[in-house]
Image 1: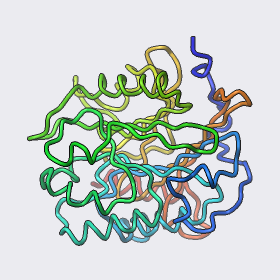
Image 2 (image 1 turned 90 degrees about the horizontal axis):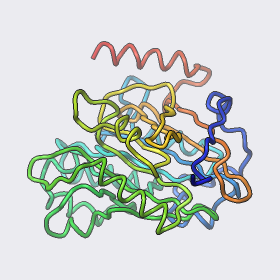
Image 3 (image 1 turned 120 degrees about the horizontal axis):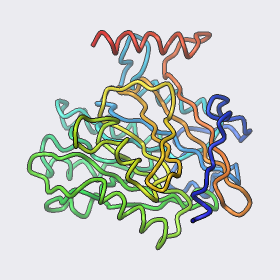
Length: 314
């Protein structure tokens, strides 16, 4: 058994949130791909994540959500971290210039990687290829066979150094018309094994646009977790789903996999911190969700209830 994959979940920490003290962010833009020069907590890696932003720049539900509120929420965080998106950060109905505006804001927020979802690919592979050069973050996917220049612009995985830790990131998506497709779960597992064994990554994260749960035999992120071996965390996207926090599931080796799904239109921001012991074994986890745009003095529960009511009404 790989001792790095032993049970590492600190049950109390899931509700306690992150208590470690770090230097405040000078600016959100300071969270860059050169994170190794910025880390302030030598024994932890912090992950921030979003999904299904749908190009929604301004508040999505009254005062809640939207990319601008996400940006402000990130600016208030006291922990440096990696920032990922699990797909559909663009809106296929928006113009090229509107999509560029969304990308520019994401650049200013310091996104490190995202996986392309159906909205990014709805206007064709060539369209997405023209947008990629404007992105200061990587696009990752390991189960699509793209045509033309997009085949080299989207990487099967990237590796980012967070202090002394190596973090490997890959991505998968569901079947889309006109795009070569390989089994998402098999593809993710193949790349995760490369990242864990050959590349010696301390954390392996999959940005998955399969949906949190799908009916029948369709692949989804719960099935991906159950059938995985080397994936530590799945950043989940594609469903309009509200969770109060990340789920702790078991893989085929009975080890924990974190599945975190942060709703849609920027109404939730996820934060997960993996703690490591001195010999780089995972030793604990802290997790918390934030509601961007939540009024001062308003509780998470009351804001979440508002979102839940809107989800049910939809």
